[in-house]
Image 1 (tube, rainbow, N blue to C red):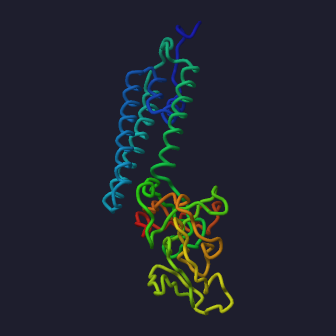
Image 2: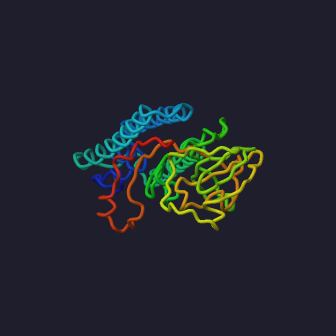
Image 3: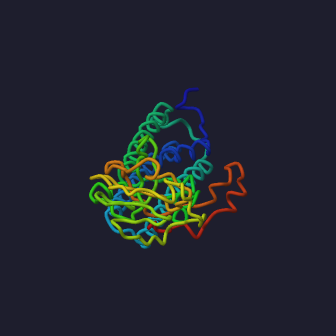
Length: 302
């Protein structure tokens, strides 16, 4: 008996897996090609709406309303995809055994669709991450109290393509000694500034700078600490910036490896979307979950 005459019962887990990999493919597997194509069209159309919103948001000053809308849009996206998966699973369980396969129910077709879809998704998501909005994880405490070890944030990758960095801004930058590594620091010195540190106090062009965002745990001034409590004076070169960590007693920054060139500043952090204690190892699942910092989620970075 060939595939066109034997009785076929769709497997629910294959239907669910297919719709997870490619929205609507599970419905195609169930013999409902029109429904599957319709679901895929809706998801693709919704993806265009999400892309347009994110692109527009990255060009505007960030606000809590924009952050709330972004979370809602992402929740709708995940919920819609989940509904398509569940629908494929439920349909495969309810459908009776059928006599024969549809012409398109072939593994080579499924494999082709999955490979093409995943390749397109990867290309688009990679382009969005590198050029529009990119997630980062904070692995150290060098920016405390502004950013904590275990904070996960989104960075606006468009911002500094049209806007020059400003004093006081927190930036994502390429590490000057190895541009494959990204750092996050605060700009304190602009091109042409005369900068120095005296007794832990930042002085720009001869005037002390008020820095309410910094953290200092060692009140004692180290007389011989030329790279921590004393520095300079230096003149910041043209088209370069002097950056420091907010945790001044525990940060590797321009005091150690010099200024940052303009092209090395690549992103502007916008808000924290997830946070938990980064010092707790990943294997300690319950400890990780208990350390979730709900109050930091949605916090705008300034």
